[in-house]
Image 1: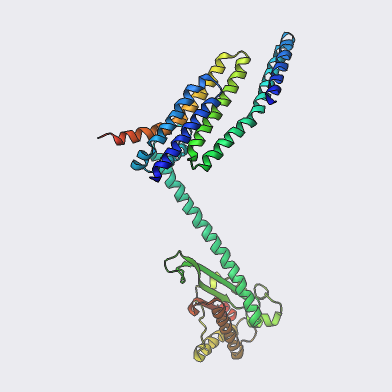
Image 2: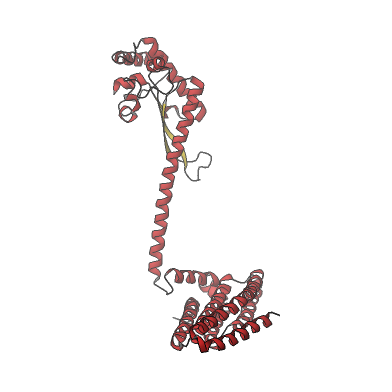
Length: 129
Length: 267
């Protein structure tokens, strides 16, 4: 039933925004942002459930927590960057949106640096000197 | 074979999680990057037996590297910096711990001095004594190889002037209320001169008593220091010493009892 709520909020805000856009474009943008945040907050609890389940399963099966932490960081960075970029894109600032996405990509790549360094060090040690 | 099952276990879980997380990702643009990191994680899990053979635990290495990265503000820096800062942090910690130990020793010394004062007052009835306790670190007798424990290195008991207390009758008024007792309230000046070692020896007590008597007769407020009074003070000091010896299990050499009359004269 939650999907109906989300779709309802989406359609309602779209109609309102279309009406409002003729009179006050500024308020139409605010309404867009508010609707986006509302849907995001609505979903954040569900995402939390999924991640909690993943964490519990990993913990009970004895998986290393550092892997889970890295994966969660990736998910968090990509969601936040995506959300911010789309809001900015709605306001018509395509270039800033792409910068936000770039920042998200770079931060995800930074997470990979320790992993890459360990793998490379191991491979270098395996190679004959 | 247990390591093999553990390794397979972990590998399957990481692959499953990576597939699951990839679906969870919001957009196509991020997907490529996230997939790279996830595949690196899978690769690291596959290599973990080799990593642990060559370098130690793979996950520990990874968490260490992550922590180092976070500390250095997001980018990898030289390991030398990290080692330096670790040394510095350890040195700071040692310094702080020493400071805290000194402070706690001082507090404990004050507490012990207060308890000794109460015991002396309770068992001998002498009030207004000034007890100074010096604590030091010494080996623990119950555990020779264990850490050092605080021990009482010396105790100085400053007896009030017998005549002054008797004259005023107010407990604790030996310091400052009478002119003769004035110097006795400054143990810093008194102790280095010559701490009076009290012994049961009759001759020693007599000579000390007479030596004190000649001086004690000079100040007017100290009263007429007769031989009997001095002998009584010596006996009192002896009882205080024995009390502290028994109650605190102390070495008799570490207890110094300063009679108020004599010390006032000597200073």
